[in-house]
Length: 267
Image (cartoon, rainbow, N blue to C red; front, side):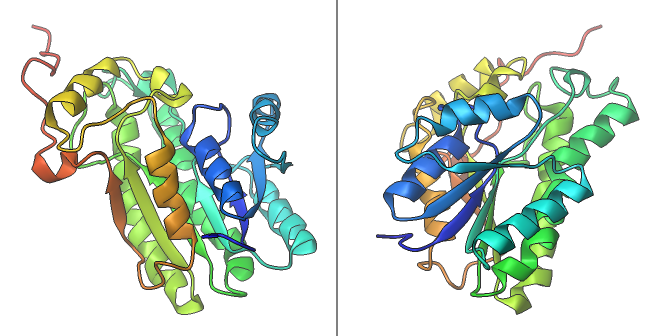
């Protein structure tokens, strides 16, 4: 199996429709032993989702904005396994003011929260787990949404994703000498809990229906999950600093937003 014997940490499992849930499911089916993370009130959602996996994994508390949580998770994984083969960073959040057309109005405090959770946490997680990943050469994979376009309603989360793409390259540079690969998977839009929080998400659906050469099913995260698992496996040993698009091909044929989708500015 693709991930036989691998030990993986998977963040972001809040809902059985999420990409992270499908990564956990495919990883288990491919032989991996996994641990999930959650925190606060979200722990209850993570536990419910975990109970629907082929095998119910343990859940560690991790708020990526708290350095002591990062340190504690690294220590717990060291005690449990002594090494780590892969990590999925499926973490992103922006306050409501940062989405849905509020780009010019969002206060710095809210923007800072979006950048801390969605961008800086990628480097923070990689730094805290680097020693465990370096034991046998590991893989970090983050979830992206193509930041080349100013998408309707995506606003500061789009900026955060652009920062994530840059952080991916720098993290790959700094962790590569330790045998750690670092890559992003830029998924097409999917009907996840996170997507439902974006005002105007329905606009993405029309873009993908019109432009994806392979077609695109917004209700099927498994193609994205399979790609993540491939990057977590040993089958792509020389790939790092990369952004792998799993979007039906929209990025390759032009992902510009049709005129009738863009919300015109108010007079």
